[in-house]
Image (cartoon, rainbow, N blue to C red):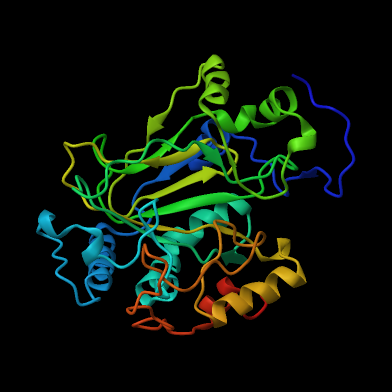
Length: 332
């Protein structure tokens, strides 16, 4: 299949930066394979402290949840969680421990090295706590996807996982197709009809489409990491959340965080980012674009509002100059 000529309001835009390799650091992996692991971005003991603070938050809803008792790891004892094991509501995005982790020097500096600037914005992204071997929730099948529209070519977004728990071969972690970032353009230009492209920065791949990626010799891997490591990946890299196997006893605990240059954000994006922050809301995996307030109110499976819903964080972050700049509240 080849792309057809089409008329659309959207135009193909090139990424603001091209990583070429030859750096002698993690950026070479990011360029060649579409992902990288930065070891010890947060000191190990501090990473464990962040996990404890996350556990304190998830057990603060007055239920029988006991982090040491697997029999209590049930939906009825948890705040509302997405199918992806993420927590997006209850203003958790702006809890102090979330912001403290986002502002860790080793995390911010890694993204600054990628983008070659320390004037960055950060995404208002989720907390993931995945309980292994839950009786009420079977492992989810893979959902291979990318988080970048085919109208955007080159590197526009680098996503990140702040890892607060061990991620071994049996544990929950990021799954990805190494080198798929380098075939992204070819896939859309030869396997899809441009008339069907979407501007939104998300695209899932079917089983049949995954056969095409396999024909390129690409094999999925589970990224292994330790508490305190930072996992980065290009949004063009095919990826999904890897479920823990039955042999895992690790409660996966990670914070999603993406950073990009503040200069890439439009005036409208900054205004929307400020509005979302004032509402203690969540956005997407993007820090400078694709900004909109995700559903704020936690709803139970029957569609009613969770009576435990929160309108502000339990522990608000300290509004420092650094936080304000990362949040887009004040300019650099």
